Image (cartoon, rainbow, N blue to C red; front, side, top):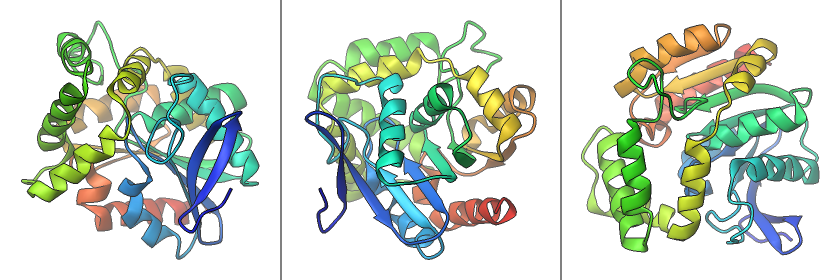
Amino acid sequence: MTTNNGTYIEVEPGIELYVQDVGTGDPVVFIPGFTFTTDVFSEQVQHFSQTHRTIVIDPRSHGRSTMTVHGNDYVTHGTDLQKVLTALNVDNATLVGWSFGCLTVWEYVRQFGTNHIKSLVLIDMPPKSLSLQQDVDWVEGNLDDLAAAYTNYLRNSKGQRDFISAYATGVMVQRDLKEEELTWIVDQSLKTPYYIAANLFSSGLFSDYREEATSSSESLPTLYIVAEHWAERATNYLAKLTPKASVKVLGGHFMFWEHSQKFNEIVTKFLEENK
């Protein structure tokens, strides 16, 4: 089904994903992170659709896609991505994942390989979220802090709101947010109910895609864009795990929104170098 603003693609009976598909040329597919939506990539859609077929997806239980208690994990999200690409006749695409959206990309690689992918852009996400060597490895955070986020915050809507608000101001951006900007960011997340957000959070934290990160970077041009706050650790970690990948450092976790022009320039150069 098509609307004035986008397309709905049924990935299984009763479950539709909302997709924006704009522009012509080599396809670039953007996948948002944990509980976020197509709207976060508005500056990228405007920029890249001038030269590329630009596709942005609301994963299941995100944004305008169907809310469902089934399949809120990154194994299913990887399968959903393949179904969307097939329905849209997309081949040889550059996949751009942000945060937990990177897990969707790596899960796609795990299930379907890399034959139909041209290149990868992975925004600020380690391929394994947790580690007993949390002081050495590039991970999502301290084990106790992440456990507290799950048990203390993602148990009701207020907790989810407080969690995203703190994350937005402390990690996502580097400047003071205007009240309306913070409200918009939090409202993005709250489109996903807290009980689904909790499932996605635990699925993401217990994922391990180190093998897919290594293998895909061996066969495909791969670019990581990591935030400044953990740049040294991330860069050192990736140099060992994915030595053939390129790594750029920019802003905070939401750098493509806060520093959209610079981000778009980095990705444009990468796409041009790997036509």
